[in-house]
Length: 213
Image 1 (cartoon, one colour):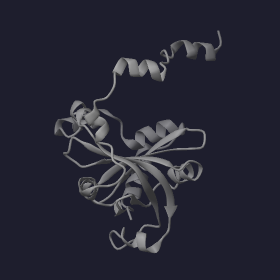
Image 2 (cartoon, one colour; image 1 turned 90 degrees about the horizontal axis):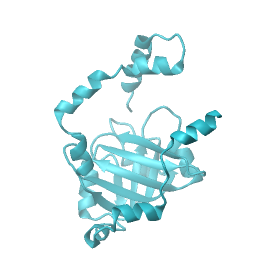
Image 3 (cartoon, rainbow, N blue to C red; image 1 turned 180 degrees about the horizontal axis):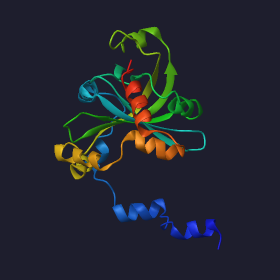
């Protein structure tokens, strides 16, 4: 038996879309009605209070990527009811999201407000911009963003809080889970497979974290 055959034997059974729908049933009409094609006053206010979002993109082959984005509450700016912009702050310079958007402009966003169980989801089409007027609106700590991602909104809706309730995400006791993990420096040293000092890597990470803008 080859390694490929062995791997295929360990994969769970694949269900068709029809089988999944048969198991789940149809959503209620009220659930379908919550999806809108524009940013209303409630969505706008939620975005203005959100300091964190997850950004999902995919390349031309469909390989997905999900990138965390965060800053002061309201860092993502609503330009109008069908358009919003997200600043690009200094990071690892891999530019995965930009590369994906160049190949496939579909995008999905999930906005989070600390302490709020519900999240706001936005789906649409995206493109990068260096428009000065847009970047100026995103000035933080005296510095404007170098680039921004503009999202042309297609769908906006609030997602119920069951996932955050089950995960106990806002429960302070849940933070104790982080103490059971190795440090970021230790994990990086192990993953790189080299004789690197975890403390040195940890210091490098901390130095990078101090350069937020």
